[in-house]
Length: 270
Ligand code: HPA
Image 1 (cartoon, helix red, strand yellow):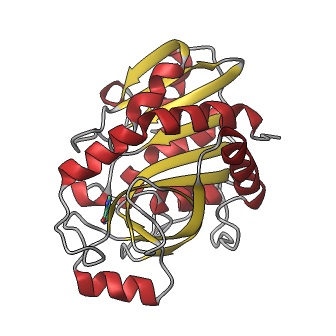
Image 2: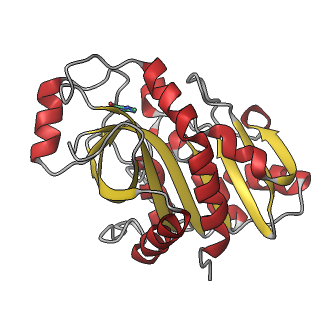
């Protein structure tokens, strides 16, 4: 099945990306930066799960960012939509077999660390998986990677250092923190957020971690960026709504586009 997906993509384009970007909720604007883009709706790719969340376009776009051949996943599938962990990481595995060696993920997240403000960009330094599943559970596919992959540097240290340098040069403020992954789709309770803060989480979201596990399994290098679209439940005396999440994503749009455009061509992919 995965091989069919790879064949389908190769039948649509000769571009061979070694870098891929996954765009999160309301963060799809970056896809417009590609030259001669070949958009492939997920529904056309064998085995690829559809994408239903509002703010998720649901297509793979292959093209060039300047000189850099790039794959962009505009929209991802989430466990909370009812997809299996294997379905959630399908796209990452297809990209890995297509030759992608470096994966950059963006997501919308709630800010737990009180030093963060709505609109902050946070490089994920590590994660805590509280989704109750792991995409590698079940028979191991030895073609993809080992049974027990190491996760002690799941988020490439060199990529993070580069991302901080690029942000500084562009005058973009960027922090670093630990991402807690929840199943969703309900937002957390204030008690859950106090728990997450206690165990060392700085931001919380409902995505990214399955993809990061699958990418590490395949030996890809990973960089992940959270956009703090709202402060997490109970941090501020106000409710969370999905509209605010999308609005903050839209406000961050130009900053994130500039950041990715400058950063991606500088990632080493050897
Ligand atoms: N919690 C979980 N996921 C999120 C949040 C949040 O507060 N904001 C955006 N995605």
